[in-house]
Length: 428
Image (cartoon, rainbow, N blue to C red; front, side, top):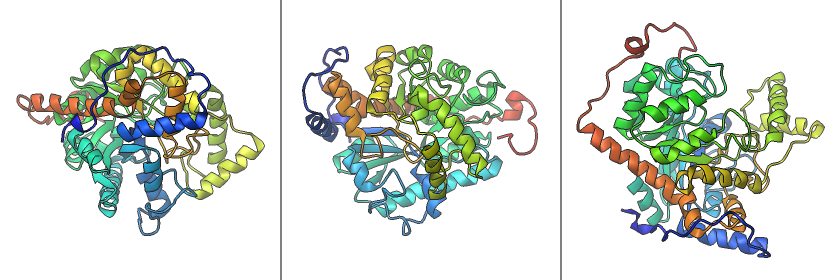
């Protein structure tokens, strides 16, 4: 199936964001829902698989996603449909303190869950491996389900493992999570390699050959720039916002955003409050410390962990982001990178807190309504929600077809390219 199913609108001049006047909020939301029926959301990052691991051991009998799960999760099937989601990259994430084969095995378990999820609800979900699969799923009225691995520790410094994940359906790899790898620096760790090592560059080249998107969320600025220099295919930021609007190292600096048009890549804004609202950064650091003091991992979102978070909020009220907060990032990202290079990656079920009005996966119409209020055209919004993400995956597939004609699978090892590696946990 081709992109004729959802034709890209005739380009319109891009107006400067401006309020549309006195149009009622409810009418804007209705307009947003109508637009999403034509050009639904491709969301770049949802951590439901890890949430299901933590809360139910992946048991879809214990947590039936066809039923309302709003008391425990950001995501269920009815709310995905209410939110106008047409394609979802499910994150097959494992924590970065998982090392070596343990990380690989846990990633395989995550992949197994996504496949079980699509098998369980075949009338509502369709496993998607290509851009054409995304279009076909939409034509059938199903949500295209793609997979992205969050963190290069999932490949244990093995290009053969990278290829195996691709064969199993993984279509992007986030080069790092919160910690450095032996071959790539993370945004939230102390610099070690100065970006990508020689082996890290080989990982990018092999991803290009496979048609796997290079995801630069979570990586250090130096790693971003190295990947843009090496990559022959468009890159992705699956869930990152603007550094200029909210000065957090997880966000994208303007020089990198400005480089996306030449590369063809897409930056997908995230909703995580500490990445979009400056006042939330300090509050989240204190909340994380409180979580650790009570024996929880800072990223944990189990019911007991959330009870701990809510108790902390009673004594220290949380700064609250809104759809307008996220829209400020999109306005800036559109100005710097251009409307062809932005998208949405909410990070639902991977964060303890979300903006008011973007409380779960049903909330996307509220963001689109805010952008309509600011004067965004239907054509620009359709690019944001659907067309840009489909295009970038198709472009990666095209590059891979060309490369596979002349380039064989890489047999390089990290020892060959970077020298002997230290033994023990944490080497990857």
